[in-house]
Image 1 (cartoon, one colour):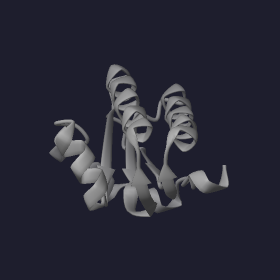
Image 2 (cartoon, helix red, strand yellow):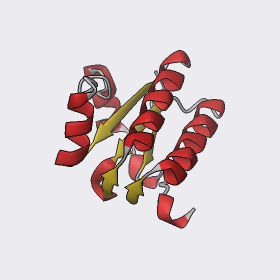
Image 3 (cartoon, helix red, strand yellow):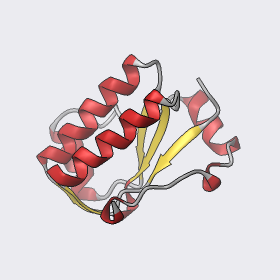
Length: 117
């Protein structure tokens, strides 16, 4: 696993429009060999089924590339969606990945705000 963790911070409602853009950003990251992706959900106010579908497709794509995709700062609505879909454990990074996040200077990496794209 690369020590380069891509941190994404979507803002607002994660619906079909934003989900497609987020999936595109994740696909571009994979092509650039950035396969350790952390999505900070603190700015997501609401996520619909298309947002969840985007996360599932992105997770599969990242795992196929040998990477990992994790969510952090999920609100109760997002946690409920993940729980109902039995995915609450699917979007966690392994312990060794968490060490990478702690030691990587990720605050200087590009952060994408979906509302501005």
